Amino acid sequence: MSADLLTASGLSLSLGGRRVVDGVSLSLHAGQWVALVGPNGAGKSSLLSILAGLRPPDEGLITLAGRAMTQWPARDRARQLAWLSQQGEAEGDIAVADVVRLGRLPHLGLIGQAGPDDEQIVQAAMAETECLALAGRRLSALSGGERQRVLLARALAVQAPVLLLDEPTTHLDAPHQHDLVRSLVRQARAGRAVAAVLHDLNLALAADRLLVMAQGRLQADGAPSDPAVRATLEAVFAHAFRIERFGQRWVAVPDLDTP
Amino acid sequence: MPVHRAALSVPALVASLLGLSVLLLAAGVSAGSEGWSLNWRADADLISAIRAPRSLGAWVAGALLGLAGALAQGLFRNPLADPFLLGSAAGAGLGVVLVLVAGGAAGVTLGLAQAGWLLQAGLVSAAFVGALAGVLLTLLLAGGAARPMRLLLCGVVVGVLMGSLSDLLLILSPEALRGKQVFLLGTTGFLGWQHVAWMAGSLVWLLPLARRLARVLDALVLGEASASSLGLNLPRLRLGLVALMALATACAVSQAGLVAFVGLVAPHIVRRWVVVTHAGLLALSALSGGVLLLAADVLARSVIAPQELPVGVVTALLGGGYLLWLLRQQTRPA
Image 1 (tube, each protein chain N blue to C red):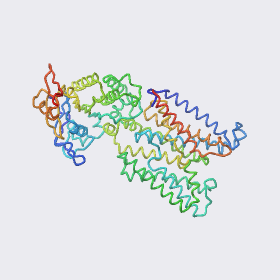
Image 2: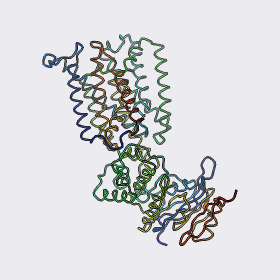
Image 3: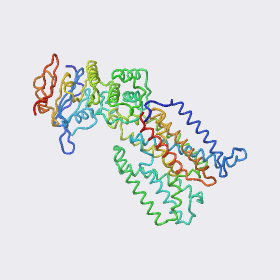
Image 4: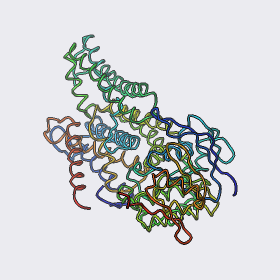
């Protein structure tokens, strides 16, 4: 596989006396999209925010593009790595297009003027997530799914080599979830390293690689075609489903028969 | 918000607010204690000495409060935030009470209306220093501006502490009560040209500085963590924004007292009509704040002339009424 854009070794984090991330090591490669899966409370979001440099780990090291995370000036880091938070935090009355333009903030700073290139990138990001028609709307007037697409466009507009997304499919209907996954694939094929926390296992099983987390630990790291990875995935969810082959794809079939 | 898209273009709103300002200024120089007078030539002395500075002063004080309100609402990501949140109101109040009590101890005749030039200058500086001291104490207690929730809580604590200190002093020296009352209700009656110059001088550098930091407020719309992920040093930038808010508030409050509601309502008026980023919101909130306080001043002078209403009572009525109207609009299906 191609270059490691982001590597982490021995990451640990305790919150309120509980180890939410426990000795996690991994690397994200250019050109690959990775799904981070695991039951509620497994530490996925905490791990993602540590990887994004937003929360210092208690132990462990992260290297972004060959340089220690702590050595990156904040604005330079923000050009290398875009992060999409879990939904619910964004609240306000600015226009959709201006939300997406915030993706250019790491490039422009507080007073730099956006040029035609920036505007083109913003338009392309909005086209990618189908929110061009929403451009003049207030963020506060959008539905959950529309808002999620706008926030995703904001993250894409950074054009960072590393893209970390925390539950990007929340509130999206099935067709838009599929569009999102296609979009992640395109981002990866364009040479980015993409990692997304996903709850829909059928979408996750379409990823190039799965990171399976439970109880703060990375339980498996490999392609969905690897039987050991699939077995771990079934196990961390207490065998609530079976993973079966369907044509070229792997699918999770819920086990609803056991009383 | 009831309107999904902008109801007005930004230039149309600017033109309306400027037009209103001019009309209200004309009303402001015509409103005397003996009713309306359109004979400006005959009243020239009265206008240039009293009515013009008072009207302009009301506008500029309102603009400062509107700016501070837009900063507060962006900083705390809350449309109910107002410029007095971080201890500036209680601090200014305590400063005023201290001067009034000290003045009383020195045998100066009390009450703002009879206050000599010295006492009045003392009150203005005490309110200014007190407002800034209140915010500074809040920042110290909160350990900086890194955690907004802690900042708000410390603002409440400082407000309560300084408020009770004021009350204690007033029990010891009850003759200062009336002066404090005038300050609490807000007053535009004492504004002269030097006050206008001082406030306008502050506005012309506070507004551009605030606009330079406006993108921080835009990014905060996404949430704290997302704003940090965009490379912003939030603790430091927030400190700068708090400082600008405190200065704008202190400038206005020290000249016009604790005028209620202008800082809270001005940004709402703007958001009702246009969809803008914070660079626009800050400037337009200053404009609306000016219109609002000037309108309140004209009403306060003319409704029961030759008596005057406290201008803060009028802003509270106007602002409260506007918020109620906004709420009614919101509950209607869009």
